[in-house]
Image (cartoon, rainbow, N blue to C red; front, side, top):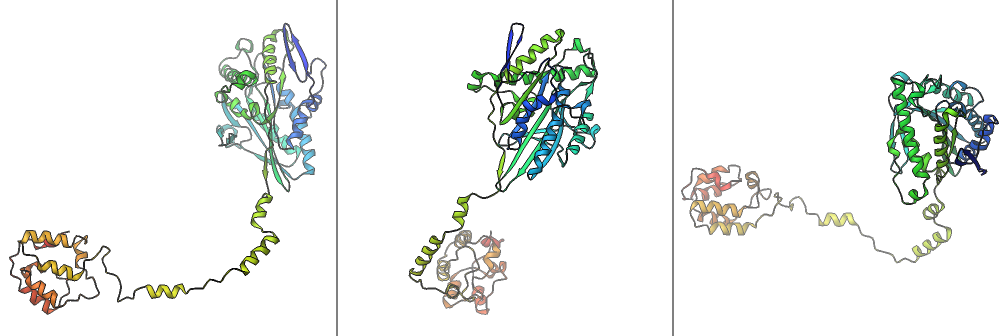
Length: 463
């Protein structure tokens, strides 16, 4: 944008701006070409942009932006933006979407919702990268200028408005018309947004004569505009900005929604609308003061794009060159041969057969001869003998496991029977384990046991 600084003097106050359109009565086309057209051109380069109209009530903000009663005409900034956008998109592969929001009584509503009377407030979310998103907002695809104009008129008709002593048709909410542009090329995808903001005007109750609902609306309007002024003042103060002072974006839904436009990665133009009336001089000074402060804000605009192809170094890693393939073939040719093994045959050879399968118990099983050797040494009374059995069979976790044979069929030799005959138990002890597989010789040996039994022989095998 061509810098053409202009000074404005109001009494003892002096302000500096980039452009001033005063008493000459210039048409809106000049305002568009000198202030807004460069931002729309940058939109096609992938930059986010914002145009907002700021000023007191009845100062001409809605008329300047092209909303309200002049929708569908060529007057205003928005109609000219739409005309230029659809002139440019004919030469590129693109997709255009629009959304229309209003901030009414500190709640965000969708002006393009299917059921405006029962509409729910929109929720503001922030991504991990700090981007502000809106949950539940309606975005519609548009193909022509006439289709976009119809959505602008539909949202403007649904916007909250009312009559006050200063304006017959006063806007009672802040309106944000957003044009989202996506341009696809062979190398990248550009995703940029243009926000066109018509702020509600600041007002005083004693001048507007507002009461009831109009008074409540005015309080919310002034509160959000005050939050906007505080953010602008802090961002425009170079010393506070260098010190890293906290910027209160979260105080109002308006500043939260315009966070990227005010101090983020967007290109922003602020149009200050003022009244020439003497009775409005105080509000005019406030508007000029904050517009001058906003001019000191420095945003770092960044192209919003996405890659549509893999970097070249990835292809180099995945696809070897001819020389690399040749060298690999030479190395493979001179590589010494490695004898091959039949691993399946080796595995079968090392795997025991069914008859040589491991014991049934998961835990370690004592050797048979050692166990019977311990049996033969038991020469102590019954209670201690039961404790000795617990020590011998501590590896078993239950009586059912104890009863399981280690092999498919128990094997007993003469030493086993000799050890059993030395034990002085009676046959009642073995009635607790009738499942034990023994032949007749075993039971004969058991019957010779002459040790008195207790009333609870199961304690020998308690778990």
